[in-house]
Length: 242
Image (cartoon, rainbow, N blue to C red):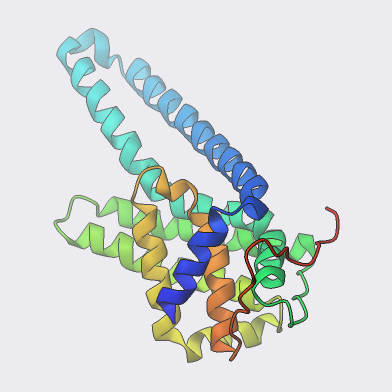
């Protein structure tokens, strides 16, 4: 079931129908990452200047330069899951609707959550993910423990966020959460896949869109639905204008 859902999600992520959303998602993600990079580099420069590190210990300035570069790379890697969840809040419903209409045309499409509620939900989860990853970052240098904490925490958080947001298009949020718990093994395995993609440079930039498509398919399959194959060249029913 997970293999079929992942294959369908990959097909959708690279499809012309989602290409516009893909570029918007990439642009927003890169914008947030650049903003975070700018803020962290300025913070490091301020710390060095305010503590007169360069003047007192010139050699430490060079060492700090390379350590800062490595540290920023690690820090941004730990920020990616939270950024992914925040980005998903902007594009989830429209991307989910495309997947539903393309692969499940006989089923009525889901109902989007009110935009304000969807963003509150996304921001809340992004904040929780950021907090959890800051804790994981604090224990990064403990052998194995830091990596295991990062992977395990994000597998759970990503599976919870994406599945519940996809399921909430068809059922109340408490019922969506209960469905996730009832299928915890499968949803968590999907979360492990997403957490693994998060640590792959460049690939992690398309993870939000892939995660949306993946969980739409997984939710449908767990609900007893199967995608309907189309003949080559056949178009999906048109979407309402956005």
